[in-house]
Image (cartoon, rainbow, N blue to C red; front, side, top):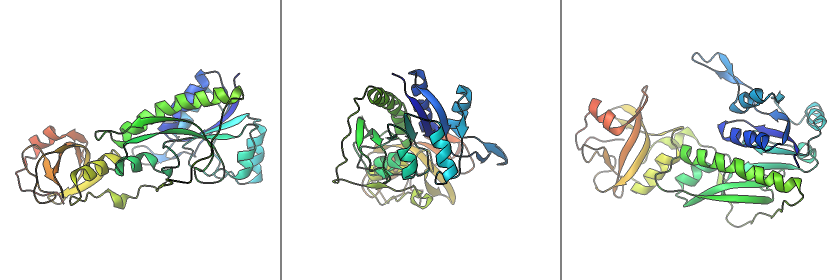
Length: 307
């Protein structure tokens, strides 16, 4: 039985779930997203969110309220008479009155295996901390920060060559399928909920750009995971001959030397323990490029240092 839903989301990550819900016959009464922000080549043109662009193509009403805490916002939300709300990276806190408005509740798709990595940046933090697995979960929302009862989950392995954008794209597609299955179970009255454990709670704080500088004194695998966890944005970086270079993809390599030192003509860089080899990078003011292309234009001799 199709449900009448309100969809709430903002970035690219959210779009597959919206499209999958529509393709499976659910009625989207309205889409809530963040207001357009200045963008374009000169930063003057208002850019709608990816979710708004998708919703406009579907012909679904789009709302971009600055707050959901006003009586007017609550009345507008209630007027859609939704069975449930689906929330995927919306970016605004839902007050209790909004959570209580849909008949069957509000359900969030979260990109971690709760209670690990509650909060804003679960994909980045999972990679940066060296986690072996990540995943997506459907959770019935409450007023806490990702503390609601969990309904369904899917797991994904995190190999060392996986970057944040790789994991983002994988979880986005997997999460869309998971939410469709959860809404099907909700529609037939068979969605089972389980309280989150209080053991193993961690918080995924928003990424601060100050974290992006590479610390070459760390072991090679920690450096690799730091680089991949911040790729492509904001991008882990180091300075090479007084110019900033973002490193976007790398691999573990054999070798040792002073941390940050170039060890050979293949961009192998010494770490506190062992080394990494740079695969893809981006010079300041330039586009991203493969290491081989970079070396053709900027040949480096052993002993040059990234700092």
